[in-house]
Length: 412
Image 1 (cartoon, rainbow, N blue to C red):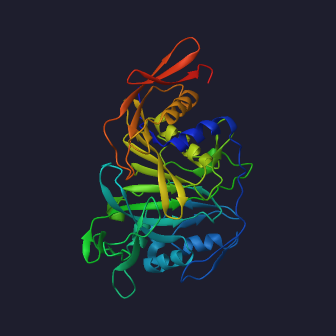
Image 2 (spheres, one colour):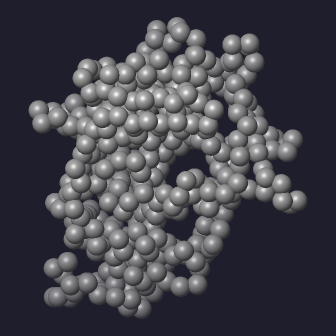
Image 3 (spheres, rainbow, N blue to C red):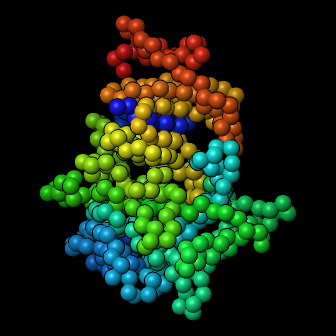
C-alpha cells in the first residue's frame, strides 16, 4: 500500500536537514531540577521536584508518580469537583496557561487569512516523564469555566502577526486588540475586534519538556503514549480544536548519528498517533528539533495513519514563526512539495536536499516531489511543478519540466 506524505519546506530547513543527516550530534537529556518562572501580574512560582506534582494537580491535571519525575495521566471527571475556575487560576498563576490570537495564512486554504485562537499549555519547565493517553482530554472544562460571579471567562488579547510576532494595527495606526468570550453553556467563542465580530480557529499549543529518562525505563512507559493529546470527546468537551501544536523549542529533543530520536518517544505499536486531532503542528527553535519532528511525521506514514496533516514551523522569535514543512498523510502515495519563499525562482538547492533526505530516510517508501512557489504573504502561487528523479549507473539526475537542476551520487 502506498501512503501520501505531502511535505512543504523552505530552502533553509532543507539545507540544514541534509547537513544534520551527516553531522547530527546527540544531545543529553536532562531533567530540570528547578526553575523560577514569573509572569506579568502573577505570583512567582519556584518549581522543584518536591512541589511539581501538587502544582499540576491543583491546576486540574492528573499527575502520578513520585520522586522527581511524573506522568500526566488521563484527567478524570471526578477530579474536577473543585471549581474549574480555581483550577484555571492555579494554572495561570503557575504560568502554565496563557492565550494568544494570531492572524496568519490558512492551512486549509492557502490563499486566505484567518484568525487563530491558541490555548497554550506550557509544561517546558516541568519534570514530566511521560504523557499518557488522553492526559488533557477534559481541559476544555477548565478553559471555558465561568467566573465565580457567574460571568463568562473573557480575555483581551493583542492581535499578533504570526510571521513577525508584532501586534497588528488598524488603518489609523492604532494597535489591534480582540475581546474573546468563552461561553461554557455551548462552548461557543465570541470574538470581536473594534466592535466587529470575527470567526476564530480554536487551537491548543502544548509546550513540551525534555523528558527525563531513567536507565531502567523502556519506551513502553517513557515519552508520549499513543493518543496522549486527544481532545476528541464532543459530549464532555463541547469543542474539539481544529489544530494541536506541539512546541519542542524549549527541549533537547534531537536525533543521534544513527537517525534515532533523542528525548521524544511514542508508542508506534498500533497506529502510532499522538492525538485524534487530525491537524498537528510542530514548533522548533533548532534544526535538530525540526528533523526529529520530521521523523515523527514519517512514523505516522509508516504506521499507515491517514487523513492527517502535520506542519513544521521554525520559531524565529517570541510569537514569530515561519513554515518549514507541511505534510498531508493519506493512504495512496507520498507527494512531497518543496516550496520557494518567493514566486520568482525555483528552489533548486532545496529540491536537491529534499531528494537527498528522502533517499537517506525513506528507502522503503515511494514518493513524488514537486516544486511549489509561494508569495511573500505565504500564499501559494500557481500549480506545483513535478520533479523527476532519474538514475544511471552512478548518479540520480533531478529534473523539472525535463530541465536538469542537479545530480546526486548513487551512494548518497
